[in-house]
Length: 105
Image 1 (cartoon, rainbow, N blue to C red):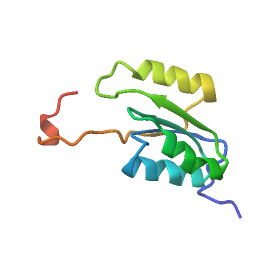
Image 2 (image 1 turned 90 degrees about the vertical axis):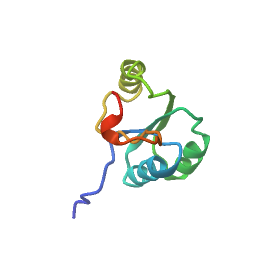
Image 3 (image 1 turned 180 degrees about the vertical axis):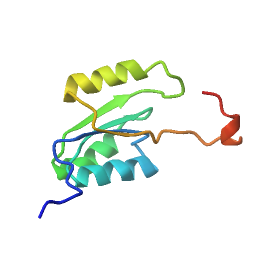
Image 4 (image 1 turned 90 degrees about the horizontal axis):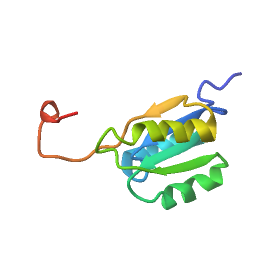
């Protein structure tokens, strides 16, 4: 029987993967076999240590996603290292005291 949750051979980019929900999502995708590219402002040492026993490829990209400036270079780096992006989890965010409709781009 084919496992519908098998992500072997897939590359997942997860923003905000260094802590919390993003880290949990990255771990779950890795458990299913996906290679993980973790993007965030903080070092990804803990994420790397958690993924090591799973035997999946891992790549960390340090970037501040508070603006659109780093996106082209992030995509270029992922494509250079992995050849494609199969899964994208846009999880990075900040906690702010405003309604979502009031946030700028």
